[in-house]
Length: 394
Image (tube, rainbow, N blue to C red):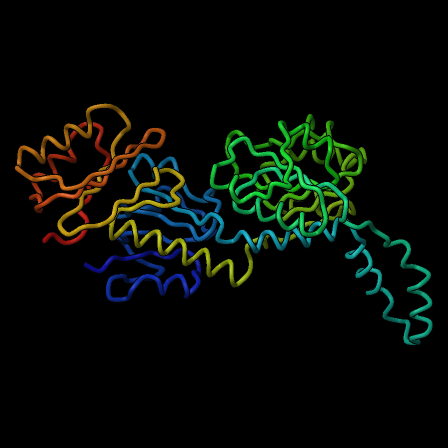
């Protein structure tokens, strides 16, 4: 059966090509789509039809998706962590250079010299004035990286190649991320310890309740005078009042961010970019490919990778039927579901169960196709959110 995927933004063709046209129909308008694929579109719960089985974002952040409402309805939300990591890393490198040298100021000054048509006079003027744009080199300076995931670890490695010393802080560092890190990255035990020892600080954290406003006046007070702060993560991580106070007091030398805010625009000590961290052709292609692959794997096999609200779960597909069951993460629900299959003499050939927070997710391979009445009995079990029959049966 052909599945319908609703796209709510322009999605890279390289990503859409991962969904075979003989199995998928892709359009910007469907009344009852099977899945939604988007980028920055602000999705409301009322915009998600009952037919939707999954939502995938071609990007890392999912603050434009009502994740909690999706969880309550048993809809996994996928993102694309790391797919745009190199693009962001390169923009952070640009930010470091802009924050250390008078590049922007120098360019703006040269634009004022259009009336100097004599080349000798132009060169004389430049030689006399260039000292006001003198900066400092990055070699030997210390960069603090807050958040050492896919992007932060690349930023740390990049800074090391530039000859900088690197200090990292990430209390939630995964084993996989730790393996990616160079042994030259020193660890800070606390954020305040990192802020007190760095010339530059780069933020690479998601927006969570625990990170919203995390960089506040108290942290700024522990920072050494003349520090440059780079934020290519999310605007909400930095408390604006604390930031403005640190800038006004001269404690913070420069703030470089990818998120313009009215109170920051026009300041000489602030460099703002129009949210272009992931705006490269390569990053858009990578994010779209990753999102499409995850959608396809879920729709065709029930497997879950890189979901922000469901557990990671992958079960090799065998012949026969597969059921996916989403339920509240409480005891006895799975047992009640399996007892219904047993009552119908339907053999379970393989099964995998995992949970995340309030959600439990199960893939159950069975030897024969259950009747609709059996599926409905499973759906009626208290605590079951949804039951899906995946694929054809032998």
